[in-house]
Length: 188
Image 1 (cartoon, helix red, strand yellow):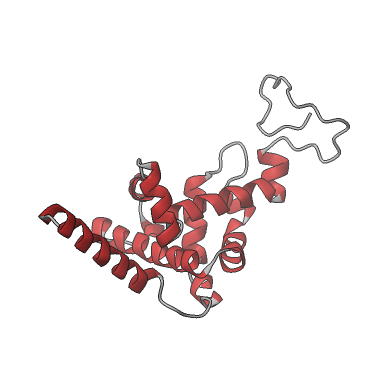
Image 2 (tube, rainbow, N blue to C red):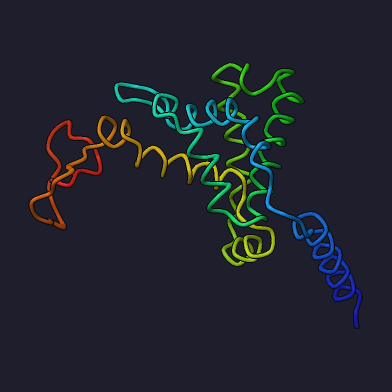
């Protein structure tokens, strides 16, 4: 065995051991109170991702309760831990770089923080991305964006005021032309 294979094997064993220790530790489901204490932070994050414009934003739609329940009820233990650890990492990053919590940061600082975490959640190598998700679970920012968008599109305010929603469609048309100033996700 040459030196390159020995180094690669050592790094692989160390990486797997660390990931099993950090993310694969046995345990019960998370306590919902851990997420309940973070609702204000989740509300601010949601508003940064879907801000209020001429349509209601995420804060108006009240997505923080949906995100907490979805993470608790729909995610496995590994993803739940990733989400809670990600919220704490986000707060730590904001305090270390801007000397205040995320909630009290300026909109420019919030955008910079979210850009940083968005870059951290992306991987440009498809194989590495799939392997990382299989071993470590979904990244925090991916889970956050997923549940904010799902919650917004299925909320009453989001579906009725933010999107064009036809609750009684007469026929299904797979391809339609969007009218001038029509909102997205129209069914007629």
